[in-house]
Image (cartoon, rainbow, N blue to C red):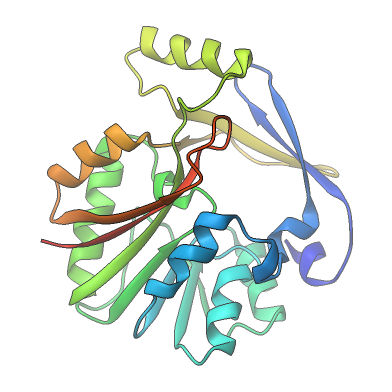
Length: 232
């Protein structure tokens, strides 16, 4: 992410625990608005008030909103991401986990979780705990822009096999265990939950949040979506 902020091109790898590897461009971390996924571009119009960007990365979303005049706070578990977002011009960024939000009550009006970050907390109990924390630190009319992927919307054989392996282990089909490789760096393994739309409905029913709208392409093998959540 520091390289992205410094304009250094390159590729990084996301390795799944079944051995599948996806190659991505470093520059994706600073994509301009015009290159965002369609659901992200559509959902951003729901932003209001003071914004918390969870998993801010190099500041792709946070800085876009900051330029529009919003007061934005970015958080990321990776110190390098926080450093990169500050280099890009984000005024407020902190190293913080989505599993341990330490803000005061009622101070945010919008929470943005793009780039599949709605599932960054991992397993269901952790996502529900995060939603309870978000309920406390947001205003009564706050919204969450929950970015994830409807994991089962695929015809890719490797994904289908992985989904079945998860079901056999009593895990959600889209709960992936991954690590990132870049140059000589390798992260620890961590869980990321790609939440199906059915699972999203179940999660919200167990929380103080409800689904207002879902933006998605609806096309096979294009599972990304953004759900707009509001308080009940």
